[in-house]
Amino acid sequence: MTTTVTIKANHGWPVDVKAYHPDGSPIETSGGRVPAGETRDFHVHSGQDLFVHEVQPDEAATPFTTDDGKAVPYGLGDEVELARSGEQGEIIGVGLYARTPPMFLVEYVTADGRQTENWFLAEAITRA
Image (tube, rainbow, N blue to C red; front, side, top):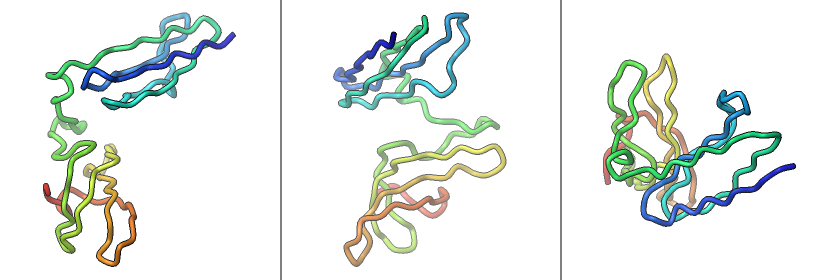
């Protein structure tokens, strides 16, 4: 049997969701963060548990950190400007890797009107 749980993050803050095996161990490929204002379905089966955490304002403001504890300068939804071109866009992804600096997936409109996305290092973007 599979159970579908619909999460509506309609209180202005995101909601964290995580599934667990019956023995209490986390299911690594499950769950995620439902952004504020969005709705997502999650599925559990075979006795799994679903943990739902309503993120509080002070938690949502906590920045990402790298493995060495340094704060990541940008987060999801931040409006940024590409340093060389002046084109503006929104961060739609953050890549944190063990041996490289953080990277940011920016969705933006190019000077010739094409909508595109690309990965950038922090020094290649600034706040818009």
